[in-house]
Image (cartoon, rainbow, N blue to C red; front, side, top):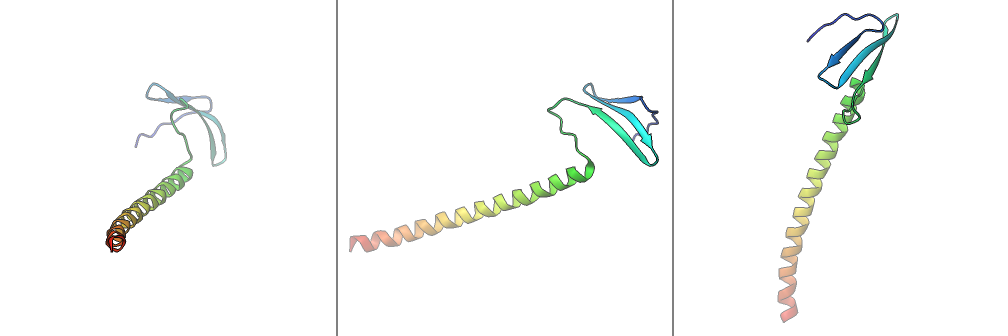
Amino acid sequence: MLVLTRKVGESIVIGQDIEVTVLEVRGEQVKLGIRAPRSIAVHRKEVYLAIQAENREAAQSVGELAQLAEWWQRRSEVQGGENEGKERE
């Protein structure tokens, strides 16, 4: 981890497109300003972790739905074969 010391009004630059500026320090709180392209998501860490957890849950649900769809397709194929024999009789 890179550790930097900055004063109010000073910035750091990440890559070519991201600038983080110290706007205010009050007690134990630091107010930061972040300038970044709209294509780059910027979140507080707790929000980012919540998004990741929701994405994992959604991916698991999609996997479960895919398994259910496969099961339903196999079931339909088996039942379709059984119905064909009955229709011919």
